[in-house]
Image (tube, rainbow, N blue to C red):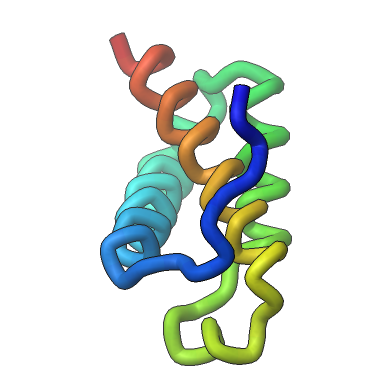
Length: 84
């Protein structure tokens, strides 16, 4: 498994992160979050701790953005698996 990502996060990746955030926000609003596994709940907690609005992306270190992208991908995979 390759754990090193490119240092720059693209606009498409930022849109992807934002889309996952919107989806998780909708789950919280509809209270469907209670049906998720503990692993997914922990991923949502980590996601929100790292989430940075697009306006402040320039201020964040590339490492933190790459970490956020990795957690976002893992969170999305879990959400897709659990929604089946």
